Image 1: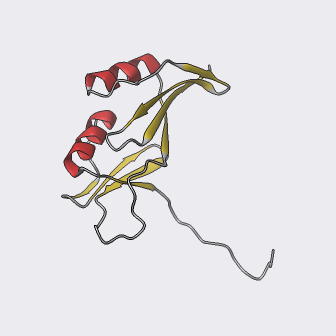
Image 2: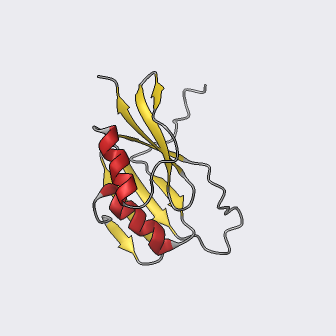
Image 3: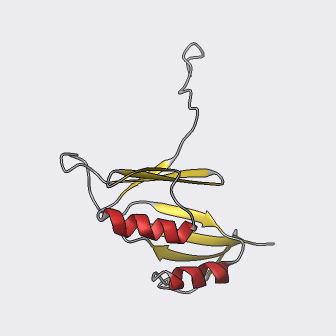
Length: 126
């Protein structure tokens, strides 16, 4: 590596998700996170902020050449109570499709947002 060239000087980062149906996805994340977005431009962009992550939702322009609705993202969310999180998902109409999985880092379950992006909800081992 050339020591004379400095790398990218990143000040912050966040994840954005393209959504197919704006209102449906906005409502899903409002209910999932139990809060309103910190920033909101109707039918264009909404941003939620929670510990360790900023999550933006955006409505893609039809002219975006690389836009595809093929889900390719997993959003991992650490929860304090996995059973409570499962109950919450069911209450808002998105019950997880499978069983709780035991992994090396704890217990987890997969769920999906309205656009098919995978949510991994996990409770660390204690």
